[in-house]
Amino acid sequence: MDIKGYITDIQTYSLCDGPGIRTTVFLKGCLLNCRWCHNPEGNRRFPEVFPYSPNCEGCGTCMEICPAGAISMAGERRPRIDKGRCIDCFSCAEACPHEAMVVWGREAGVEEIMAEVERDKPFYRNSGGGMTLSGGEPLAQPEFAAALLKAAKERGIHTALDTCGHAPWEKLKKALEGADFVLYDIKHMDPDRHRAFCGRSNGLILENARRVAESGVAMRVRVPLIPGVNDDEENLKATAAFVAGLRQQAAGGLEVDVLPYHPYAGAKYRVFGLEYPFPQGEGYPEERLREIVEVFLLRDLEVTVGG
Image 1 (cartoon, rainbow, N blue to C red):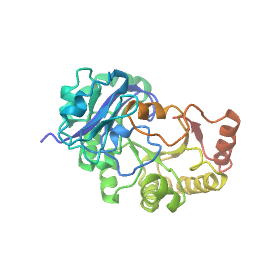
Image 2 (cartoon, one colour):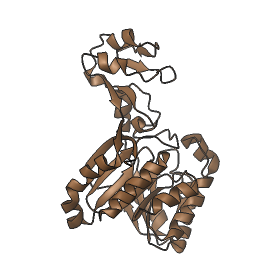
Image 3 (cartoon, rainbow, N blue to C red):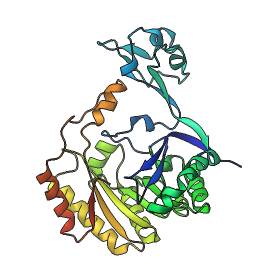
């Protein structure tokens, strides 16, 4: 039986989602709610509508046709959707004459996805690349994720799982059976701060990180740097110490990837008619980034920057 799930995109020639040239499959749905998320269209598991404001002419057709009264027009005559009222009927997307209301997410089967992934097999062979599952969070659809990884591995394609780790261990363990490589996010070491900015505590995430390290699957810990959230010295040192402990447990090798805050994520939020609570247009100064990397180097960790 062809297992099906929901995806937002399949990105070919990806260079930042694991070794080599990769095809990244973005699964829909997430188990956290990070306030800086760069992919808000991937948070909910099922297809949903977002405005695409560059196409909007302010005609109000979407607002008039919405049976739930979930759409309003902001001051600049740009639509906003009240997700609490939206019933996902997609009437607005069907009626908009300017293609300014876009449905994100579609159902796809394992065989359909693998047919697309297999097209780039020559690139994988020549670069050491393969297929990466990302999101959203792949483990929001654990059976689908495990089936995709298994199918790719059976076809001789290197597999990577990009995860936040907030999932029951049995679900993660099942996915690891088909994974050659794990990209594992560590966002904050303080449980209260983690809950405040990501919606959940980090206890399960840290425990699963230890288990992944012990599993024998090659692992790259990814540390997103968010200004004023997790880039203070106390948290950076605690993160480096934790990762150094993982490296001692790691049976399959462990690397660290520092991911500097992307200052242009706010542009996507504006396009979608959403508010973005973090600075826009400003990245990390080079000197500060070197200082942050040094914290990890002092723990004798192998560090890359930016994927």
